Structure formats: structure tokens, C-alpha cells
Length: 358
Image 1 (tube, rainbow, N blue to C red):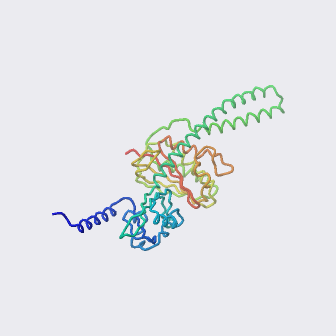
Image 2: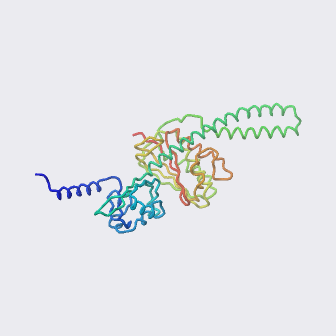
Image 3: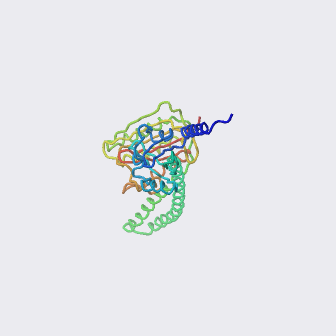
């Protein structure tokens, strides 16, 4: 026996309600006064707010300071023309902030038009795209610098040799000038060698990562003229990893030295280790990795150089060479790892991820 029209309608409504609750896409519905009247569980999880707390509130509670404004939504209710916006940053407080792609459309409920908003969080996709782009830019900048360094190094050798030969033909007073030429040629040669970066392949062996960090701790402690407080927060359960001990030590030391020079007296630097799972490293999903964090509570890195921080010759200090972090990036890359940085005033964190073989 076929169900009645009313039974079909009730069943349809039941399926629609169940479907909305099972969707992984966050769904939010506004009434014709643009007040919140429904959230599915995915939206509650994304917003970290229950429907009970948000029901009846104006949409501005969520979309204040975004491009989703009352004018656009009223136009949507009038014309029915749906729209999609990317890079909508939603922030309730300092602790909860995310970026979403939002599609707005019209649905009819009890013959009254409502606004249907579908959320898709895109922070992870944006981060992966940004990391891939920055990695490509860093490789291009590194290759350019290396090409220029080789072109500079060859004539420098000839210049120094000519100055040495000329020095033999001059008196003692005039030899001061050739000595200056030789000294400056040596200085430039040293700079070029640093620009070229490490040229030896890593010697991979199994090491305890904490023994590597302890050496960094000791080196910095012995030369701690600024009275920087050094703290250690280690996870003792981390197994030995395959790495070149000296290269990892040099990478961490470069970062710590940069932090020491950037922060003020009596500030704190923390060396922290943890196991990280399911991380994206240079476009590949890594199940397990060792995460080394170097954290300081200094003034932070200037915003204008954060995207190019690991490029050669980029420095936030007037007397900096901009090579320390570039070399650290090269050393980490030689281990098929990833070096990244998140900085704001009062909290700067450099993160080294090294794949852990299971």
C-alpha cells in the first residue's frame, strides 16, 4: 500500500533533517530578519557554539568585520542571486579564529525566504598552498644567489692573486694598499662561501635528538652575555632519529642565536620537543615526525619580512647578514624536513619537523 501524501511529506522532512545533521559541511540558516534560526552539528563544531547559544542572535554576532554584511544578504533575499566568498576570516576571540569559504543562497521555509549559508574551512588548504609557494620562491632565490656567488668568486681569486704579485713590486708604504685589497677580497670570499651554503651531504646516523639540543643549550649558556633565560621542555619518549648530528645542531644554533640577538635582557627562550603526527612536509603527508620548537617571548619578527624570512640576505637587524636562517633552512631540507615560523609580539616560534621512520 502506497503511503499518503502527508506521510510522504513527513518522511521527506525527516530525511532532510537527518541529512542536514549528518553533513560534514557546516550549514547555518538565517530567517528573513537575518537572525540565526538553525545550525547543523558541523556548524556547531566549527563555530564552537551550540545552536542553543546562537539561536535568535543577529548574523553580525558571527560575521562582524567581514564581507558578509546586511546589504548583501538583503539583496540576496530580494533577488535570489546566490554568491560565494573566499577568505572570510571569522574570529570570536583571540583563541578561536579560522578562514572559511562561504556560499550564500535562498531556501523557502513555510513560504518565507531564508538565507542558507554553507561554510568550508580552508585554513589547511591555504597553509599548504602558501608553504608550497614559499618553498618554490626560496629554491629560486637560493639558486639565483648561488649562481651570482659563483660568478663573483672567480674574479675575486684573480683580484687577490694580482694584488699579491703587485705587492712584491711595491715599497712598504704602498704595500698597505695591496694588503687592504687582499683583506677585503678574503672578506668577500668568506661571504660568498657562506652564501653558497653547506656543500657536504649529511652523514646520517641514529642520534638522540635531546643530546643534540643539549649541546646547543650548553654553547648558548656559556656565551650568554644578555642574561637570556634558557628553558627546556623535552618529551623523553621520543626515540632516536636518523640525522646528521652536527647539521641539526647548527640549524638549531642558528635559530637560537638569532633569537638571542632579537630579544631583550631577561627574556626567555624555550627548547621544546614533541612527536607530531600527520604533518604535511613539502607536499607529502608524513605520519610521524619529531617536532623541535624554539620559542621566545621577544618583540616578534617584523610583518614585512615574515614571508621572506628564510631567503638569503633577508634580516630584521641593521647589522645582520641574513644568512643564519637561510643556512638553517638548507640544513633542514637536507634531512627532508621542514622549517617554519609563526610570530607575533610576545611569542615567536620556529618549528623544525624531521620525519621519523617507524
